[in-house]
Image (tube, rainbow, N blue to C red; front, side, top):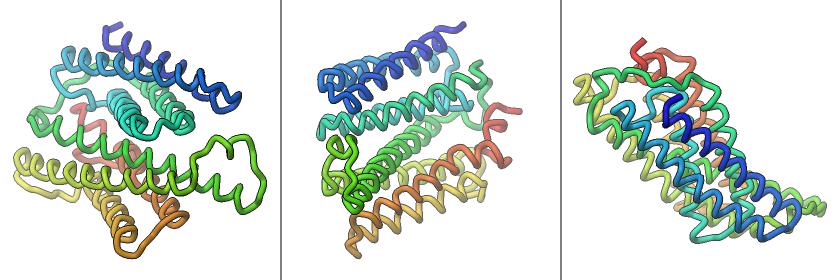
Length: 278
């Protein structure tokens, strides 16, 4: 077992511990568990950073070329983005939604082929880490937006039905959730845009063309237009609340398909098989 895989498994166990602590806080109303979960999650994130650094040293490239590496990098991005937002909002209930998502992503990553692969020579460029880092961070921000959108719809439904579960009293206000959603859109959209632009510049350097209508590129553009429409709606048409929440969830579904569905089911430059040089 390589050092990076060992660290990956330790990081996974740490995220599991953080998930349990956050859920204890929400279910049993133990605030100390939530505070402990936050510190455990920070420790897991530091371990995960070490995992990616060691993997980079072992392989010589940014570790996102295989499904295992991509899922690991996705979980790392999601936890990192959540911790940044947590510095501002300090809402353990969001952690109770985010940490299970990161944990499941890590579990699926650990269940796939974990051996290092040979990077396609065409991908050996400094644009590679720039492009994938921007893209993954943008994805993580939009994942957080989708999570708070689900929380918004749950709370709104309970308010309308006047049936309040224990979770209702743990959730932030509708206005706070809507504000976080908007901030995620404000941060995520520029990241996605820069990710697409850097990818186009890299494609031109590698293949002699800025746009090749690869399935991944096509779906990334579709997703970009969806979030552009949402941003325009929020800024110009006053979209708020339920409409914005539903639109965020739809955008995330498209984003998830762009990340996993296209890579797994369509042949192209971005498919995992092609990235692995097979």
